[in-house]
Structures are given as structure tokens and as C-alpha cells.
Length: 113
Length: 111
Picture 1 (tube, rainbow over the protein chains, first blue to last red):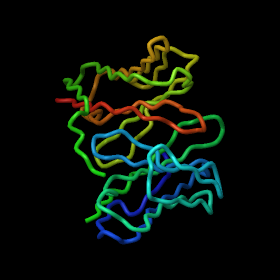
Picture 2: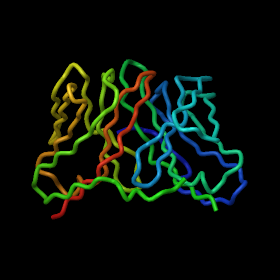
Picture 3: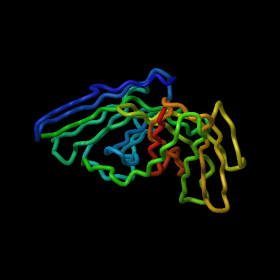
Picture 4: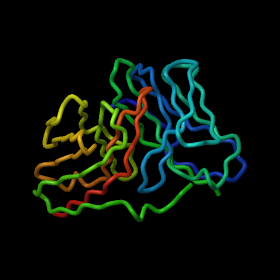
């Protein structure tokens, strides 16, 4: 069982607000990831990190930003939320030893009004 | 943004039956594949993985088969139970420690 946490689990917010989705893992994993997933759809990689001070953009263009100041923490920020940002956001981590298995958090479901 | 996944393939089985979920992958250079199970309201959960130097791998009640010739992956679940009802995703290693996920198959198990 993976120890990876996301907060909040659900968020309803108005257009134009700044939001930060939190993700923390206690496994000491070097690599962390953010995915966006609409209901019934596949996961799309939006950001990832190889370790502290490393951030990369994924496949899906996203207006969000991420930071990796500590190994265990990988927050995602939207400076100005819009209804098109409504989706589920999933955080994952993996160990950097030639194994690509990613372990996922429970997700944050975001609704922007 | 949000959209309705009306096109999600669905497999309906009776409890106790064996289930087979299929996945076609895109990159012939992929060397690692994973099956995930996602229950409603939860994040994906690791089920089983397989490397490209293998054709078959077995776990508890699950078997993954890999056919590299036709770039096809399957997940077999033996004696399917209602608790197996979920959406199942295959994922392939795309390099740089990132995964590409397939579109998912919903498995519905009726008692």
C-alpha cells in the first residue's frame, strides 16, 4: 500500500481564484507526477519531477505550475482558476531504481464555477 | 475540462466467471507495462506488471499476457468477484520514467 496523500479531496471554487493542490508522499520516492483525468477517460500527464528542484512539463498542456522544494512534497498551483480546469487531479510517485511502477494518491476533484 | 466518458468500453460478467481485458499499446520500443485498477472516487491501484522480455506473468487471481508481435496486452482475472468491479487501465513505459495510459475498460461484475 502506497503512502501518498492529496488534499483537498474535493474543491469547489469560483473563477479567477488561485488554488494549490497538495501532494505528499512518505516513501522517499524521487520521482513524482501530476495527472489530469476527466470522468471515464484516460490519465494525461501534466507535470513530473525527477527530484528536488526538478520539474518537467508533461504531454497535456496545462496552465498549472508545480514546485519541488522537498522530496516528499509536490504541490500544483493554478494562478487563476477557470471552468475549463474542472477535472480530477491525481498525484503519483515512483522510486528511482529502474522501476517505473507509479503509486497514486486518492485524487483531488476540482470544480470551478 | 469535464466530459462524459460515454465511449468507455465495458465488460459485464457474472460472479465466478473469468474476465479478460484487452489493451493495444502504441510504442514497439516500450519495455515495461502495468495494469492498474481504479475504483470510483479513488486513484489507480497497481495490479501487476510485466517486462518486455516476458510473455506471461501471474499474480494472485490475475495473469498478464504480452504479445509484442501485435503490440497487445491482456489482463485475465480468474473467478471474478463483485469487488473486482472497477475501471482497468493498461500503461506502457514511454521512457524518461513516464507512463502512457490507455483509455480504460470498465468491468462490471454481477452477483
